[in-house]
Length: 347
Image (tube, rainbow, N blue to C red):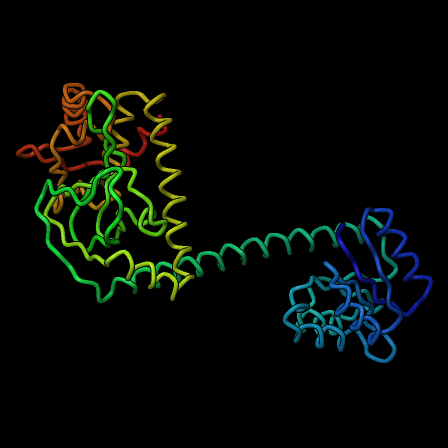
């Protein structure tokens, strides 16, 4: 239940306020002066405060100033209740950080409308603050994870090199510094299915390395790649020293799970054109498909990303070319209209 603290020295007004608010479904407490109000705010932690300006011991302005200096209380919505309507008093209260004011005598509907408005704005502000805090924490976690590989050894691998295979136990943790990888599954009929592409800044197999469990996919280079690696024991020790970096690994796993689910649904319900558009979008998200970096994947690999036959892919790409969505030069694909390709996904 939402808690509201009423600080009002007039007994009848305080009782009237408490009755209105309690009948409206709020949990209410009352204080008869500013000092008592501050003490109750500290001990009771209300969700909103309604406070008279003219109070004994400490007036309303003083209450607001004191509470605004306390980290655990400064974000509580604060509404002044006053019989004074002079502009200077209202301006002084708002300058001190009051969220709103109500003049006496007040109407019940006006009182409740102002309180609900301030509670709603507080919830919205809290949601934004939590989101911003979460993003900052994730950014820090990703920086810490990247820092673990800062001084790691690096190797260069040729195209079609198998970095690891399904059911193999991790010996190293990897960071892709340059190039393009594919993670695949082998279907029971022997056909490779490309689950995802991994580009610069990715951590192939990082979840399995962190859990120290066998890989669930195969990982193969699609181009020349520069990959940093840490022996598994060294990686796990570094994670223990920087436990906050685990949030980055969990974040990547969540994103990977969402994309995999979208891909499974797309395979079941999308048209062929949408499947090809999704594959082109995935390439674009990995820095491929521009004039400076065209898509040079084999038709077999691109068809595997789409989940369709190579012949079907070839026909669809030909249609896209005739519609000026893509260009094909020496077998490489350049997306001409990224907006139209993305629009196909919602068609």
